[in-house]
Length: 218
Image (cartoon, rainbow, N blue to C red; front, side, top):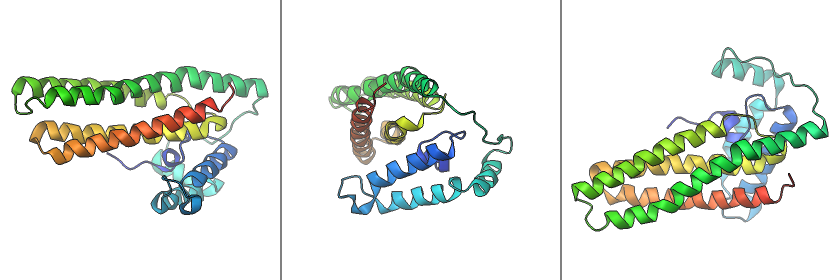
C-alpha cells in the first residue's frame, strides 16, 4: 500500500483552500498531540502532520509539491463561497460521500466475525476457505468503491474532522483486508489476528467519525 501524500495525511482534497488546510491541520493536531491525554495521541502522527503542513501551508512550497506529485495540477484558484453555497456543499458531501461510504464500512466491519466463526469449524476445509475468500473478494470490491466515493469530491472545511476519521478508518480497513487475504493463503493466524485488530481500530474510527458528524448541523 502506497504512503499517503500530504493532502491525504491532512484529510483534505488537492484543491482545498489555505483556510481549509489550516483548519484540518489544527483539528488533527488536537486529536493526536502527545499532550492531549487521549488514546489517539501519537508523536509519529504529529511528525507527519507537521511535515505535511510545512509544505501545504506555504503557497510557494505547495506549488512546487503539486508539480512533483502531479505535473498537470492547476493553480489553486477558488471563487468566494456564500454561506448558502457552503451549506449546500456540506449537504452534498454528507449525502454523496459520508453516508454511502459509512454504509459500506459498517457492512464490512460487522460481517467479519460471522465469517470467521463459519470458517473456524475447519480452516483447512477447502469449501469453507473458498467461501471466506469469496467474502474477502466481495469486501475488497465494496472497499474499492468506498475509496472511489470518498475521493470523488472535496470535503468542506467544516467536516474536516469527520473526513479525517473516515479516511483513517478506510486506511485501517484496507490494511486489515490485506492481512486477512494473506491468512486465507497461508493459514498463518498471525495475519488473522492482525486483520481483526485493524478492523477493531477501524470500527473505533468509524464511531468517532459518526460522533463528529452528529455535532455538525447540516
